[in-house]
Image 1: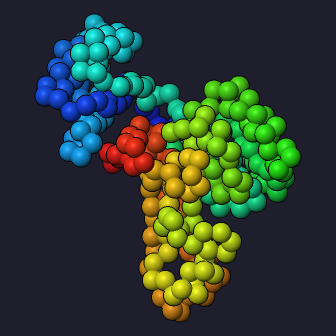
Image 2: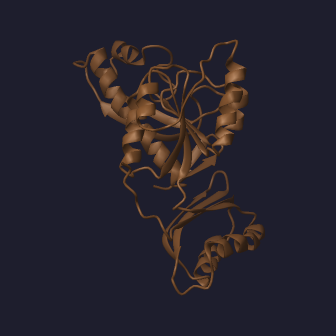
Image 3: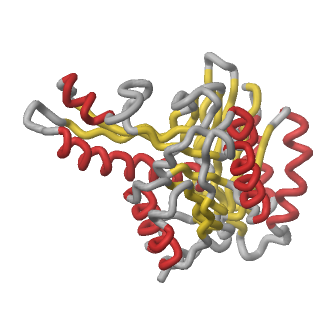
Amino acid sequence: MKQITDYSNQYILTVSCKTAPGIVAGIASYITERGGYIAELSQFDDKISGQFFLRTLFNITPDSRYTFEDIRTGFNTLAEKHGIEWAMHEVSHPTKVLIMVSRFDHCLVDLLYRYHKGELNIDITAVVSNHLDLQPLIEREGFRFAHLPVTAETKQEKEAELLNIINETETELVVLARYMQVLSDNLCKQLHGRAINIHHSFLPGFKGAKPYHQAFERGVKLIGATAHYVTADLDEGPIIEQSVLPVNHAYYPEELVALGRDTETKALAGAVKLHTENRVFLSGNKTVIFK
């Protein structure tokens, strides 16, 4: 049974715009004047790009005459004044997440565990796979399972079916939990900024088959995994989270594989949590993250 966390009366505002004076003061004043209490506020002024990023968590005091909808609707005036791109979310509304898998189950099982423990504020809309191996596990957990076997001939058709599921379920985030198929350029563009993949190394090293055997042959001293947004450039999207473990000459390939599973689950879960808490901002091919 999923453990429920009380997120009532918590709201998140995220802001990005060109750097200019008065933005923080304007936002803080706007929220407090409407009975909002700012619990967290993080900001970053990127001196290279000239972009400003801000995330604030606030609640509304009981004696306020403003509702959340009042505050969200009225923010447009301030946003237009400063040229702000923004979003305002109710934390009590979990992010709708679709998970994609192939045959490896470790990332899926870890996400399901964290979901049941209430560590991830998500609603799993479906699990999609190009194989049937994990169907019993997924259906035993009570989630919708969709089998979309992909070949070169069926790729376009199956990606269209996938998009139908995403749209039908109003999925907000797609998580590739060791899904071993390359998404088409067109699909990557449609999922821009809302699809996360896990890669079995520090990008862009050790691509292809048997990455941990490659690591063993090179005598690496660190192994790790990288969670990143999906782009048309394979495994080169903006990085969200990385996890590492020290190793040495005494670790054989099978041991590196086992340790690698740990880094993959940790990095992927961390990235999903950061994204669903609205802590990640895209900035070109990089990310700004408020932890």
